[in-house]
Image (cartoon, rainbow, N blue to C red; front, side, top):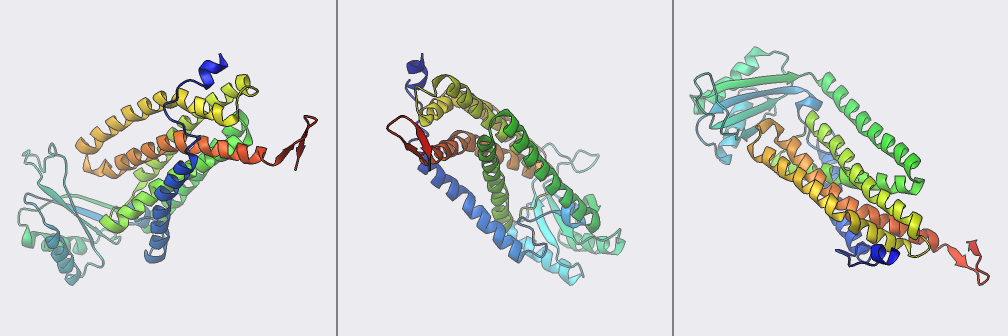
Length: 338
């Protein structure tokens, strides 16, 4: 029985190449951490990622236009807005889904010009200045939406978001400590931190290169990713624990980890793949306002699947091997701790 389970042909030998997985994780996470540190130094908010008005406070005005807008025209719009007295405007051109219409007549929106400014507190004059500048070059422009949030509420929302993430981590550690052992819980926490830092770093890089901002939905995505990744890790750890009960005296811990990962590999990949297909459809055909949320989910679930299979399991094996190496074998078959 043990020969069949522990020594069958493996799809992949995760333990043998664990330093490859550790190196890959290093290459995936470190650039994002560097980007976050750079962002914290250079951004006025000192946040590791570019945040939207949900967290900083501000006003977003969106105008629909029928023609395509090249990148050089965005710079022209920004310059005109600054000359009109609008301080530090952030201009984005959004391409909404083809099924979105601009008005009651059902006319399709070609593009959305999004203008983000500091909080205006219902400043009608500032909104009029923006509308005047936009309609100079795009006479057919129509105001689609104006959304505002105060800076105090934005800061409070950001603080509450951090508290929510911290409580999620603490709850997971407490659960895993009770369900498994302390080292399982610590390894799972390191794996979750690995996933969270990758997602944050990925969006920090997007913010630096493509001016991508995060909002409250991004925090929802991070919490969802943490839950999904933790669930995947628990499945692998649970199989390791079950196999240890029966084969601890017949195989090394590394062999048990290998067998356990291969036994759960198909399940993990199938679950993640079907989820990613659904999210891919949402990203391609869903609304413009949820693109960053869906992208965070896609990136997070992909890295969470990788970390559960290749990072968390091999890190647990490395820790147990390091722990066992601190023991000296006595010829009288007694184990003495160093």
